[in-house]
Image (cartoon, rainbow, N blue to C red; front, side, top):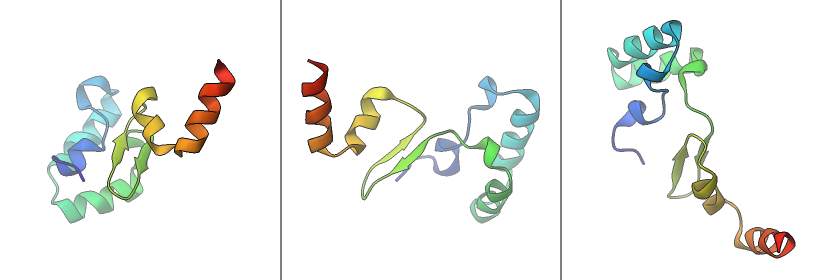
Length: 83
């Protein structure tokens, strides 16, 4: 679902505090499986939210993209209510 693996779901090191940046850089040195284990214990390194569907992945908040995960019925109702 991602092109870059774990790099797509963790925070950006350049936009993070020193402590978080160190954790992210350490994560990049690990194998994929070691990285998953590390993230289980260091969830603060993950971007939020992470939204999954059958064939879609959204990492980080994007108001336009997140609408894709709402049922069409709900989107229509909300649109009608706002007009």
